[in-house]
Length: 515
Image 1 (spheres, rainbow, N blue to C red):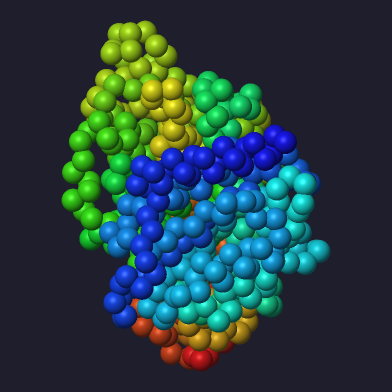
Image 2: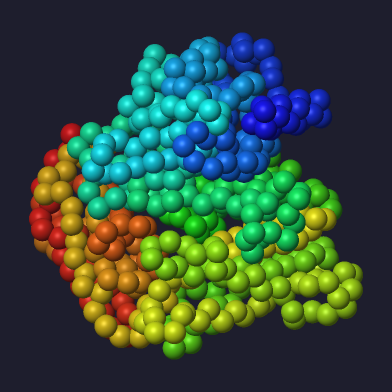
């Protein structure tokens, strides 16, 4: 009875959104042939037969995605939210084929899934759970790919679930032989690597974010960051070049910077497909309509173990309460149960009087001390900037901070395939093994030892849940100019940094063939 009541509440909220004009629907053939038509199917699962409920997080995720897509410059032909829980693979397949039945080659089909994920590499394919709290089914990558068979157009898949990177074989030490969603027809964005949990929050829980308990708030951190990256209220931070178009690559990079609880994954890597467009004039909205916090910048992603002080800057657009949640990592997981919520104490007697965390409008600079637990030579700390505004909690930014040990040896090693066919579909997966946090530079060298492509330079590592510990990188066979490299022998060179210490390692040769 409780699960049915929750679902009817969600449907009623959707009906309110439609009445307010948030749910756009136009006749299917309203656009001329040859013009891109967008359609979306948004599915959230909160109640499960095999585990606890996440309500209202997935429900809120769906509404956040709906609102984000409604800001699109090119209106969506339809945005479909199922009117009943999706409990079987057959039901999801039918919804996909009904929603996108009229798509042609110029159209774009968006599928968003928010649910629990499962993956054990020793037991087979990853799965996403479909359930209503009583009935439960498991969706595999093979079944999801098959659901789009014979559907024309480009398919944009957004998966917010634990271990969702496994659906595209990313965030793991070694890719499986069989990969799905290959080619230019699929664009996939996953909330976490293959070995990572994807975290959510719910103010009904006794966590540091529980101040607003009773408001039935909650969301998955990834979807909240994603919707903010595309929202005019937040200034569309994903649009790096401010041209009104957000490419898959731009969105992925923005999420890497602003989503900290897991490592987003993407396929294809460095893809310039436009996943979202908006009207830049929409950014000129009244301050009262904007998010209270914007333009958040962190001084660094790496701090010294001897001086672990982090400086962050942000702009408060109106009086608001601000706090900083600091989460440590232990036993391979973020310890939200031990998180510290530090209210801003710099300003006093603001528009909120003496309420904790109250600040006035303007540009702010704050310094936090991120001390590790006693006896830890190095580690990772997650920092989130949170606002409490009109009784609502919002996470505005999350950042992973690496604190390498003052000295030591990261034991660098590089693993990759000895053969790679650069056919525009598969990418060369690179696993860099390192003990503990450090900074990494990763380059592709030709037979003469010349750098043909630099994948990163002094990039801070972040935990990915892989055993042994390490970081993953992917190369699409293009050089620094974006051109295909010639067939031949290449190798991967990695340089690691611990303070003033430098370490290096090379992979074995990789024989590359252009497909």
